[in-house]
Image (cartoon, rainbow, N blue to C red; front, side, top):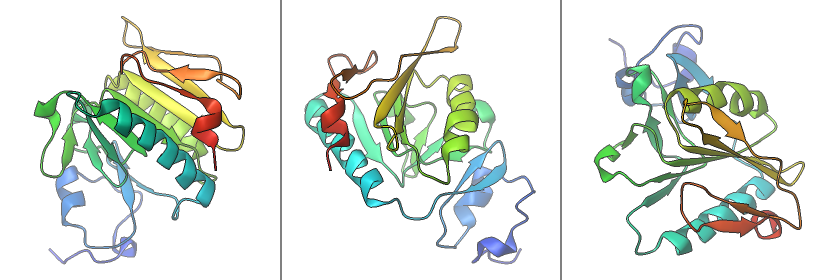
Length: 192
């Protein structure tokens, strides 16, 4: 088999596995969702990076000396209910079960995933990833909108379905139900 050094060598309508993904040698970042290739947005803009820094920084401080692990993109998360054909790179994720960590990343659902919307990924984050994270048992999913300065938190109920919060806006505090005691003011999350 020829070495894959360019995304153009792949059939974007084809179906691939995590094993295929691990052999690719191109610079573009992609995710696999149920075997389909999704190109990731170009490098995030400054506002996206600031929000990511703020959320990651607060979580980093909060989780210090706690038994959970914090990662930011690029970090591979192989969602196991999809077999071996789904790997995503969430903006931020927290894994509290060390047995899910591998040399390549995480196998199985993180406890918390935070995705920050970008102009090119809103549909993917709001539909495909929402459904994917729900199906695979990600306990909590934060959807952060830089354009609206809002955070919506989805938590799995007992039936394995997400229940969404109201949008948290300036003057309010977003609190995790999964990372006990963690919260952040919306102003702090969106501070430039």
